[in-house]
Amino acid sequence: MAVIGIESSAHTFGVGIAEGGRVLANEKEMYRIGTKGMIPDEVADFHIGNAGGVIRRALEKAGLGSGDISGIGYTRGPGMGPCLQVGQLAARFLAVRLGIRIVPVNHAVGHIEAARSFGGLDDPVALYVSGGNSQVLKLAERPFRHYRVLGETFDIGVGNMLDTFARKTGLNPAWGSTVDMAGRGGRYIELPYSVKGMDFSFTGLLTKALALSRERGMRDLCFSLEETAFAMLCETAERALLLTNSNELCVCGGVAQNARLRGMLRSMAEEHGVRFGFAPDEFNADNGGMIALVAERMLDAGRSVPVGRCDIEQRYRIEKAHVV
Ligand code: FE2
Image (cartoon, rainbow, N blue to C red; front, side, top):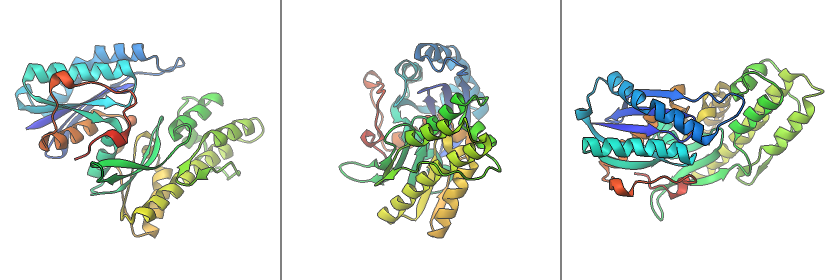
């Protein structure tokens, strides 16, 4: 029997269907951010308008009817409250309507699970890099099985840093991927490199790069911005591998789509004889498939929750989430 996963923590309304650890469908609609940024209530309205259609499409893609579904999971958090509410209500509605079990899922655990599953890894050190997050994590068994944060950003996520640089320097579209394209073939300019213990910080780097944008060529700056930020992430991931004596590494989250970052991590992993894995791009961006993968494992382990106790948590830290 198959399990549905619903993701709605930010701009994406995603619905995935998993069965036996495989994703049968992964459908989504994404709110276009434009120049205003994300206004939570507007994004939530977008999700309400798309929920029914995306759920239907996912079932069609998987070739399943509602009678083939045995359980459902949804993103409990972290994310924007009004957006999380839409996914939670859609999941509760389906759970009651179909008489199936339901389980809340941590969004970050979903990202790691996608990389672990598609990368064929067992217990990796995980580098989770997205707009809002940059963390290095590893499973810990006490006081319960959870992902322990070994290192993280002091200020903004690496994706947010790259997006902000793109927006403030007038790159179009104002995304990190545009910085990546603009920097190809650039030469290195020294920029602030800030790793403190196992943590790191990106605002100093961003400020300096913005200040230099009036006098230095964009190609060299974009190239150097990525090289510096990614080297910081690699250094922390490398130390986490050594600290935990791990032989597996994965990268996940939106910024994991960056081929340069993956290349740097791969060569570092190879030097240490460590296996390296990641998910295909559609599972690094926010998606329902990763929530379905986690939900299936949790339901198999008997971790369903009564519908009336399903809630959302905007600041749902990954260390608080039970992992099975
Ligand atoms: Fe995400």
